[in-house]
Length: 210
Image (cartoon, rainbow, N blue to C red; front, side):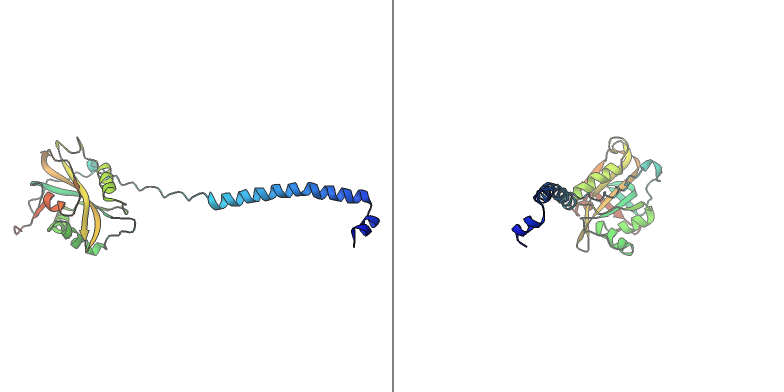
């Protein structure tokens, strides 16, 4: 139907009224489209991230442990000072790191220092497994912070500790240990930067003298 025919059939006033309504309708459509576009952009690029899981409480209160004096055998020495192993913390190294199953932990202990598995069996420390740690330095700081030594970071008390990296079956893992001596001493917190540092720090003498 041509425009001329429409103009003859439909009154001009009605055509003008319809044209005005259509003209006023398009701004509304444009506003709605803008609102929808803004909502889509916010939904895609500004989605609310799920809350992070709460940080586990890693604190270990040494005052609640009441350790006994170091046993005569197996003899564990911290720079030559006889000590009892009171706390042992293990953690995987790296976001995708993992620890071996518990049935292999004796071998893992032996990889740190020969004779340590027997020390763990006899001294019966509190063994704690921590979640994976992103860096060795971060783990060391976190261990010394959460396993707080009395006094001046243990100086002048029977307490001392060490934390750092170790290696088992070609994979790095992280270890923290806290010790108790029979008397107050000047030792404090030792940082272990490589697995060989454990040999420099600790020595185990078994009953047969090994």
